[in-house]
Image 1 (cartoon, rainbow, N blue to C red):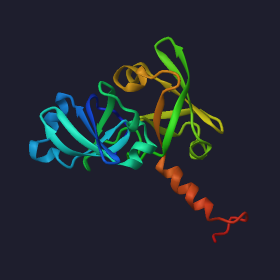
Image 2 (spheres, rainbow, N blue to C red; image 1 turned 135 degrees about the vertical axis):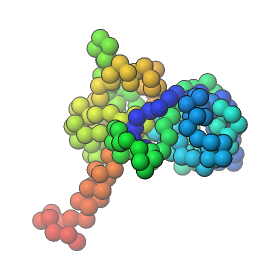
Image 3 (tube, rainbow, N blue to C red; image 1 turned 45 degrees about the vertical axis):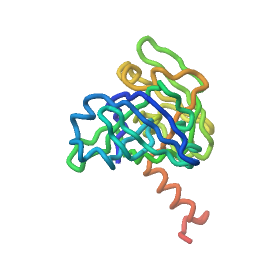
Amino acid sequence: MFTGLVESLGTVRSLADEGDAKRVVVEVPENFLESASPDNRLGESIAINGCCLTVVAANGVLWSFQAGHETLAKTNLGRLRVGDAVNLERAMPADGRFGGHIVQGHVDGIGRVAAIDPRTEFADYTIEVPASLSTKMVEKGSVAVDGVSLTLVQITATSFQVMLIPHTLAVTTLGRRKIGDEVNIETDVLAKYVAKLLAFATPSGASR
């Protein structure tokens, strides 16, 4: 489980096809090296732009991940290029402090930045999403955008708006996003369960 509080930015150093999958090598910051002994890095779960991947190799600051065909198709990781910055967050330890909101690292779909409205040091972002995702959002609720926990300000049938504070713009990839860019979206897991339960209710409210 993650919290949507991005710890650092990594840099994509190489991409290699492995059948219908892809190996992604990311240069991680020093604080990642300090947090785990060399024996514990392999198998660690890391959220990359909000997508949970497993460390399959670690050579100093270069950590390797494998993204399967489903991940490449359903997230923006399939569009990564060498040199791109990515948001990084380690899985939350059982005794860790809970920050943003419950983030599983299971991306629900891709959104597209439709508008950016700067407001002095802040900025309002409007992101277009499929209607199947917007139905699982509520105003003042939470959403993860490229792994960043954000509060929903406004919601329409096909879009939502969030306000980014200066810190978020400075320390995550969202401050580098442009209109038209694709972003990973994970809706609130609680909303998913509620939607699933309601799908099994009759119009009268009785369970099937």
